[in-house]
Image 1 (cartoon, one colour):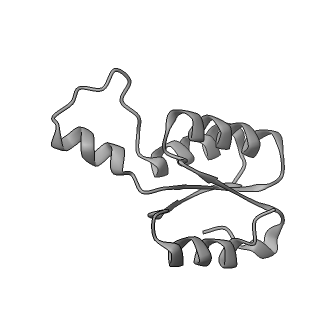
Image 2: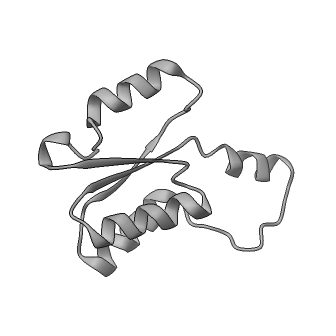
Length: 100
């Protein structure tokens, strides 16, 4: 978890998806913002349940973030698993990170 005391925080909801990951990566690489990707990972569960074969399998968020850190030598990208349908979850994310 990135502390809100370290600088400006940016929350990106849907951070495990194609657009959310790309947006998060672009912001993290091009700014000094702390970028927190937020997702409930439900699409991955649905794919397993349906035994779907995905065209492009994506590594888990933690693995992708580790690769980002290794390649770009930056540590301003993190992941929070959270269900955005839960009101208290949203309130806690906003309180914890005080997004920009």
